[in-house]
Image (tube, rainbow, N blue to C red):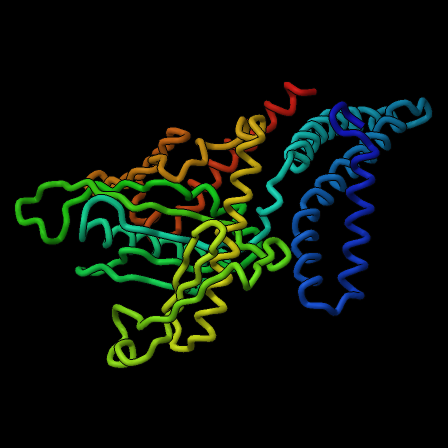
Length: 362
């Protein structure tokens, strides 16, 4: 096996994959099945890369035997020599692909996310832009086969959202969406601007890996629940029923409120889910902050106050400032169609940085 790809490590991956596959066939517990399913999804591309490399090694071995066989037909040996060069090139590519799959991964990559989009500077225009961003993520999620569920929303006075929080479930959602955290800036002429002057406004996006009950244990004695009447759109019902729920985590002072459902019980469950995710995120940030080396392979600082992207409507372009990527297809990005191109480029850049870090440490 090539340097940097120890056989023992590859065998361990294959053995673990077999254990997970077997467990999936025997387990009936829903929570255990979900965890095993996520682990299988993480291991499968690594296993496929190992199998591709081994198939190429086997092909090279067969070609080598034919070339060394003095009794073989000269024409067949010449053909084998030509195929050997091609197989070596495929093997090099297979090694590179496997090295990328073996890079350290964020354990949360396979999870769903809590997506928060908040209007920043810019008043009504910022709220409209926040709404545009959320719809962009909805469309992208639809294209990936993910499910989006709004947890709570506060509409802007002229449309859009002052704030909207949603849950996105699916395969490797955080692994794709985590690059979206930060400040998104828009430059365009608002519909209410009669002079045609370009305005600049912003919205902040936070993408948090969804927490499970096993990640964060909530002690009921450390929680305070308040119920209140929901505000915003909703007709007379909103004004008559105290169905909205705010839960405060007393040790940290962290509070979250959910008012989207008419059921107080349902809003309470959603509020606890959101609180658990925020506490999980705080702990992740604390751990990552303590690992200086881990930051070397990340795109940007991870600070949600960092300006990461500009959407320039007059010029029809989107620029991601972290990697200097500009796409002149703003409409396709806002429709969610071309957002994947930006995410792919960010993921590739992160892999390249991680690979460079691994090679330095080798």
